Amino acid sequence: MKKILFLLLIITNSVTAQDVDSLFVAANNLYKNGKFEEAIEKYKKVEAKELVSTELYYNLGNSYYKLNKVGPSIYYYEKALKLDPSNEDVKNNLVFAKRLALDNIEVLPQTVLQKFNTNYLQKLTYNEWAIVVIVFSILGSLLFLLFYFAEVPSRKRFYFVTSIGSFIFLLASLFITYNQYNISKKNKEAIVFAEKTEIRNAPTLNSEIVFTLHEGTKVIVLDAVDNWKKVKINDGKLGWIIAEDIKLLNNF
Image 1 (cartoon, one colour):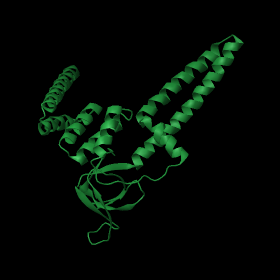
Image 2 (cartoon, rainbow, N blue to C red):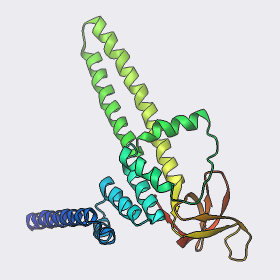
Image 3 (cartoon, rainbow, N blue to C red):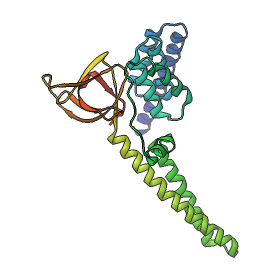
């Protein structure tokens, strides 16, 4: 019985994979023929099956960009970068998409450590840093075993020093992984989808409007009350926005 269920599972997964591939190819063909809205429908069907990829989000971003839909295009380019932070094509297209956004928000100056984190450490996701941790743990263990069994003094010293170095890098990469995970979990990023939305100083419609935002602007979600979200923008301003006016990038 278990074997039959296992075979059925394999067949089902195979059929699903073929279905997704055919949808993706069909969507690509529609995009090439300039049928962007129809292409989006196909891409969204692939997304609904939770078989996402950088290519899927990138193509969705391109499709929305062709339709001059700023919010969705920026949203999907940002989603693509979440999966592949070093993808240059996505980065370049995101720059063009952001030029269509109306809000020009100055970023607060960063400290040296913040710049180092943004420019270097965040080039890898926390999942990729976790792989680095595993690599250094295996490497350090192998070098220690070589040190333990080595008989030549010079080799013994070499293996000892390199194993210590590997374990130091292991601890450092473990700390970075934990830190990147916390940053990703705490910084719930979202994109404004409303054409124009008012940010208030309290989660009520009769509270004071402190500033306005437009479609495509990225915000950090800090808190939630009923159908309101407390957000922060790049220049440090805080306020409350109606939840349906934004769409979260993070899946937490």
